[in-house]
Length: 180
Image (cartoon, rainbow, N blue to C red; front, side, top):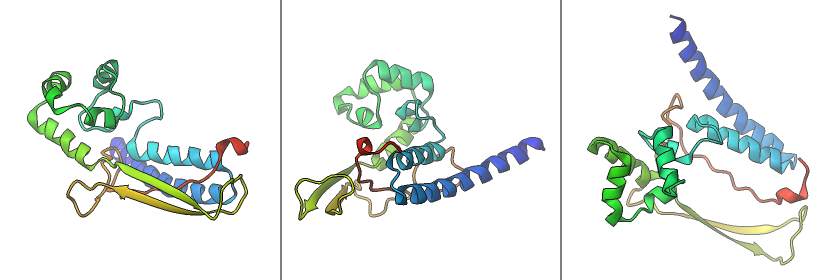
């Protein structure tokens, strides 16, 4: 019975933590504390993924273990993009490395197809030399290849207690210009 209460308490804490972290980012960033806002954003990501910052990024992939992530790192595969960029002619090497069933491999392929690959471009409007504290107008363009889909859908976060939609922050600042 205690385990059931612990699990429901954990779910409640995770959901509350996400809302609190969002509020912290809003308050901290509006006060101009860039470094603290960036830290709160990182903690938000860790809460959603159920991972520490020091954990391998590959642990976001379905069916990956710390041991498998270490084997991949030994082959210079350290990010999801490194994994995705393994050439099709390396599929035998990928199968040998992963040693997973076809359904597990399909789960990984589905995850990789949905993993966000976003290109950001920006242009400073009416300005050249910009310094911290200056008012600046930017034109920002985000482009994302949806791989034939029309909707993004919730993120893959199996350790998070409910479906969670993607959330993004656009941060403009110079972390060297502040001590906060």
